Image (cartoon, helix red, strand yellow):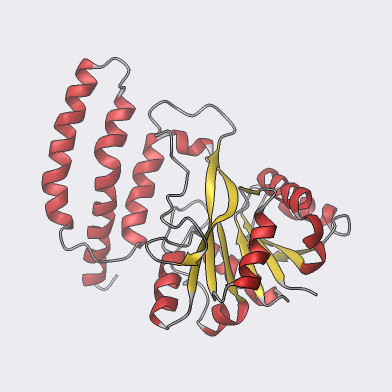
Length: 299
C-alpha cells in the first residue's frame, strides 16, 4: 500500500539529483512498495528532465517527473504536494543522501507516533577539501532531542521533513514569497510553516535518528556566500529580536577588535577567518533590521 510520496525538488543540479536517487535505490530496502518518488523540476535548463526520464521504469519504486515553471523552492514543494498520491509527504533535498536507516526510521516514526509534521537530522559531507576558516562542525544539524519527541527546542529542517498531505494542503502549503528562488538565496519557509502549524494546534515532532547526509557545496567555500546567506536568514526568519540594534552596535565592534588582534598575531588565522568570525552573525541582525524597514514602508 502506498504510504509515502518522497518529493525531491531540483533546479539545475542533475548530477546531484542523480546521486540522490541512486542512494534512495540503494537504501530503500523492503519499503519500495510503500513509496513513490516525485522529482519536481523547478524550471531547470540542464539535463534534469532527460536524466529523470531515463530512470523511469528502471527503479524498484515508481518514479514520477513533474515540471514547475514558477521559480522558487516553495512553489516546487507545493506542486509536489498536489501531485502526490500518498497520505504522507517526505521532502528530501536533491543534495541530500539517505543512509541505511533513513527509511526504517521514516516508517517507524509514522507508525508509532502521532505527529502531523516531523523532521530529522543531517550531517555534512564534502566533495572537496573545505577551507580551514570554515568551522569544523559546519553543516551538521544541532539537535537537542536524543530520541523521537515533540518538537521542543528543535526545529524542522526542509532538507529532511515529513508532513501529512492533508495538513499541508489544508493550511495553504509553503509561502511562495519565502525560500530559495533560482540563484537567489532565501530562507524561512519551513520555520514559517512550523510556527503556523504549532499555533493551530497540530502535533510536531523530531527524530534525531531519522538521518541524511547533506552536501556542503563548494559555493559555500567563499566567505561572501556566508555573508549573503546570513543576511537572508535574518531577513526571512522569525521576527522578534528587540535587542537587535544594540547587539549590532556593541557586540560586533568587540568581536572585530578581538579577531583583528588574533589576525595580527596568529599566522594560522587568516583574513577569511576574521571576516567570517566578525561579520556573519551580525549580518543576520542586519537582515532582520532590513526586513523591519521594508515592512514599515510597505515593502
